[in-house]
Amino acid sequence: MGLEEKLPSGFILSTVEEAAGLARKSSVFPATFGLACCAFEMMTAGAGRYDLARFGMEVFRGSPRQADLMIVAGRVSQKMAPVLRQVYDQMPNPKWVISMGVCASSGGMFNNYAIVQGVDHVVPVDIYLPGCPPRPEMLMDAILKLHEKIRHEKLGVNREEAAREAEEAAMKALPTIEMKGLLR
Image (cartoon, rainbow, N blue to C red; front, side, top):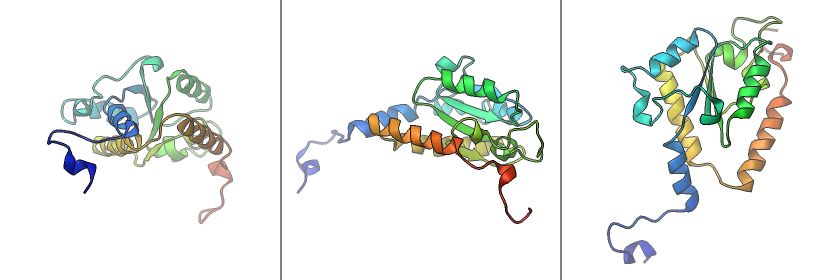
C-alpha cells in the first residue's frame, strides 16, 4: 500500500535528480573537434541517413561556450593538445567528452613523439569509441550510452567533487608508451 496507489492516474513521481537528468540527456549540444579521418564519420552521423536530430543533436556548435559535449575525432598532435584543453576549459559545466577512434583513444598506429598517446592525458574522457575509423552507428551507440550516464549523474557538490577527482586521476595516468604488456 504505497503512495502510488493513492494517487489518481496521470501523476508521475520522480526526484529532482531524475528530472534534471532527463532534461540534461535530452539537450546535449556537441562541439566540433574533428582532427582526422574520424571527422568524416562524425559528420556522416549528423547527416540525413543516420540523423542525430532524433536525439536533439542536429546542430554541431562552432563555439565551445554553446556546447557541452566534445567529440574528439582523430589523432591529437602535441601542438593541438593545448588548443584542445583550452576549448574544453571554455565549455560550460557540466561537460562530457567522447574519444572517437583508436587514434584519439590511444594514439593508434602513430607511436611517435608528435602524437599524444591518448586524449585522456589532455582532457577527462567519458566514453571511448574504438575503431579505425568507427562507423556512424558506433558513434550513435556511444552517444546513447553517454545519455544513460548523464541521466543517472548526481547533482550539486557531490558531482563537482567526483568530476574533479576523475580529472586529477586522468592527468596522473601512466602514458601509454611507458606501459608494459604483451607487446613490450
